[in-house]
Every structure is written in C-alpha cells, then in structure tokens.
Amino acid sequence: MLRVNSAGTAYEWFSPDYMSNPMTSLGDMIYGNAIGAPLRLPPNTTTTKKFLSMTGDGTSGDQPQWLTAVTSVGLTMPVAFSVTGSPVTTTGTLAVTAIGTATQYIRGDGQLATFPSNAGGGSSVSYYLNGSVASSVAGYKQMDNNAVIGAGTDFNLTGNGLIAQFLTDVGNPNRIQIPGGGWNFEMFFNSSSNGGNEKFYVELLKYDGTTFTSIASSSTNPEAITGGTATDLYLTSLAVPTTALLVTDRLAVRVYIVDNSAGRTITLHTEDGNLCEIITTFAGGVASLNGLTENTQYFAVGTSGSDFNISSVIDTHTFNLPSASASVRGALLSADWTTFNGKMANVFTSLGDMVYSNAGGAPVRRSGNITTTKMFLSQTGDGTVSAAPQWSAVTAADVSAVPTTRTITINDVAFDLSANREWSVGDFGTW
Image (cartoon, rainbow, N blue to C red; front, side):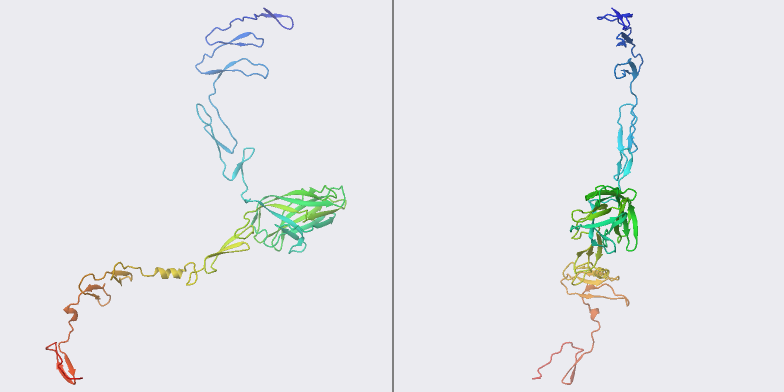
C-alpha cells in the first residue's frame, strides 16, 4: 500500500497486515519510528550488561537505546545527618544517622538547633494585674499570681503616656533568672469614642528595692485599640531576653498609650470580668511540697528538736538532725565517737577468763585455770616493767620468809615455839 501524507504526496509503501523484517543479527530488536515504520535496534554486543532505556516527552516516546547498568548510588543528606555506606557500588546498605544530641532538634532546613536550656518544665507562671490592690511602692498596683475578682478597677488616660503600672510583692518571683522567650499579655481596653488610631504597648522591668531596670518593651510594635467604645480583649506579645535576677528582685509592668492624636480617653479595665493576665516563661514547677506552695523552694540543714525532723516554713525545708544525748535521739558528736571508739573490746570467751593489759595498753585475754589444782595468778616484773600474769602453784620458795623463832605469851608467861611448831594449851580453868 502506498502511504500518502496530508499534502497528498506518496512517500513509502506500507502493508496494513505485514511489515518488512529489518533484523539481521542475533539480539536485534524492532521499534517503531515517528510514523510507525519498523526500525532495527542493534543488540548490545559489549561484555557489559546493559538495559534498554527510553525517555519520552509526556506525549510520545523516543528512540530506545542501550544504557550501562547503574554501577554506583550515592546519598547526600542535610548537615544534621551522617551518611555511611555511600556510594553503593555493589550490594550494600546506605545508613543515615542523626548527629545531634538529646538537647537538639532538626529544623525544617535540615540544620541542627538547640532547645532552650533555661525553660523549665511544667505549666507557665501567670500574673494578674490587680488594680484595686496598692503596691508597697507608691504609684504602683499589685501584680500577683492570684487574681482579685472584685467589682473591677479601671484606669483612664486622655492623650498619650503611662496609663498604669504594676509591681510584684516582696519575694516574688523569687527567681534567679528569667528564661528567654515570649510573654503574652491579655489586656482589656475601650475608648471614649469610635474611630482613631490609638495603640498601647507594655514594658517589663526589674526592681531591686531602689532602682527600676528595663528588661523589654514593645514600644516599636504597639497594639492597636480598634474596638472603639466597646470593651474588648487585646493580645500582645513581648520578646523577653534571658535575664539574670537577684532572688530578692521584683518585677514591674508599665502600660503606655500612644498615637492618641484625637485626645480620646482610653480606659484600661482590670479585675471582675476583665482579668488582665500575663503568661510568662517561668515554669510552674512544684505546686506543693510538704505544704509549701512557693514556686521556688529551698533545702537547709539544722539541729533543732529532740529527734530527726523536717521544718517547712515559707519556701524553705530544713532537715534537722540534733546532736544525740541522754534525752535526744540524733547524730553522734565527734567527742562521742572518740569516747565510744576508745572503749575496751570484749575478749572473754570462757568461764574464768581474765583480762590484763599488754605493753601497748590493749586488753589481752588470760584464760582461767582449768586444772584441778588450786593455783594463784602471779606476776613478776623486771624492776621497771611488769610481765604477763600466769597461773602457778605456791612453792616453798614463795614462803621462804617463815620465821625460825616463835613465842607465845599467855598470862605473862612466854612459851618458845621454835622447836615444836605445835603446842597445846592445857586446862587453865575458866578464863
């Protein structure tokens, strides 16, 4: 059959049922060209294994070709990971391991980042602006962890400037550091009239009893008061840097109004149904420990009492271990230890044992006389130092000092007993 193109020109013969065989060698393959005519694809005659590959354009295919098999596969990962076993050139395993620590996380861009180490666990500590409670510092109201409901207390300001300021009580927050992060402020405002572009911002300060030192301010990003005469809730966030504190430092918050060009009166509402709350980066931590509810608590040691006891007062738990005595159960003093350590050890083991001191003053056991002969404990020194005692019988030598002459006088008459050691007194009648 003669194939005719769209211009009416015949350009090849074509059989609808049969096609010519272009293959000439072992391994030849046939593929169709762009117009459907068979074409020969020569075989892979090399000694390297190859694969028939084709890449299309989304609509039609392309001429197939023999490609060498993949001989190497490599893997790259972001810097937060370590890759081993790459590239794989035969059979193998690509191993991927995160290289961070337990205090780090992997960001979306594959970089390692460290979790903040100064943010404690537990819920956040909140403060409430109690407008009806005066602070110990003139001009300030109370900023406390407990909210005062009451009937509500309002602060008014016409124009721009400081509308209200609040200060924590003595001993609050009782921390040595503010963890860095965002503090969220929930405030209630309204304006004396609608319209306008009034805004507010907040400032956080620390107070050492003499000086107020600014920590952070949102003055460059004030929050618009858009509700007009309607009292509405406004939220603003304050970026607070990690800040060192003295344990006696207090915190203050000042609230300012800006861009009040129309001279409207702005009202800050506190308490009642308008509880102004500050959510901090302080960790809530322990809710109660041995009855104490202070957020930061301490341990101390003492010696009070007549037995071991724990005294918990305000924010401190004191572990009392008194010194032991006849009436007190407690710890031994150093002098007690010396006394007890100097006591003589019990060296007795049997009935009749006796104890004597050796040359060093230590107790030594002298066993009892276990023979059936009566013996006596004797000891002989050298004129300066004694010897160890021993059990021995009494000998004649031990009694060599018996006198050779003896007399007895009865009724003024002397009788010689030296010749005869035995002498009987006759009947002298009644004495």
